[in-house]
Length: 169
Image 1 (cartoon, rainbow, N blue to C red):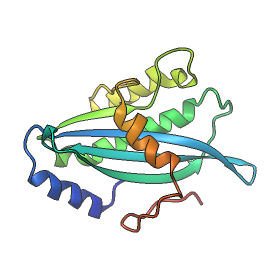
Image 2: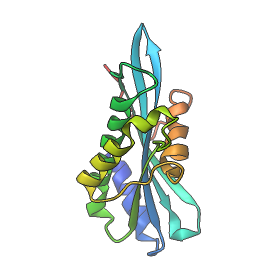
Image 3: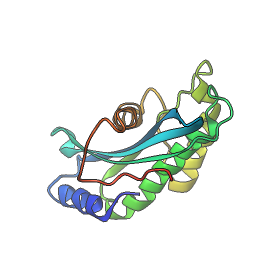
Image 4: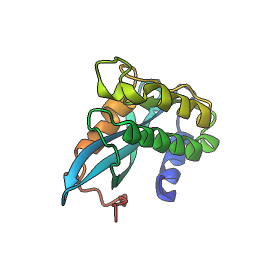
């Protein structure tokens, strides 16, 4: 998920931080159409809250993939893809940063009036099963709801030569 360079940057950053540092992982996506086909822009983030008081640094990975959901108001597959991506990031990072608290955030609303509710229990169960970490859902999922959302919604509007983004083929 993250490049070797990003992993090195995270490790280098964490070397100078104390045990009050927390790491928050999140993923969000946005649907769009191109040439009559539906796609989703995914942004997966690791937010390092430095020493619990010194601000944060955000690392991100973005990708574009086909969106296979049949109903736009019931995005189960897309939300499960978000759960898979944030779990993959956890599996990649956890062995390297096990001395720090890590939270996993899902941008999924548990209120039945919202469409994302369709995948709330499935996505939370998937993340718990893969990572052993119980994820935070809205409204406590700021890393996904704000951090990842920022990059998903501004995909293509930001130039960042430091990291390569994976595009759908």
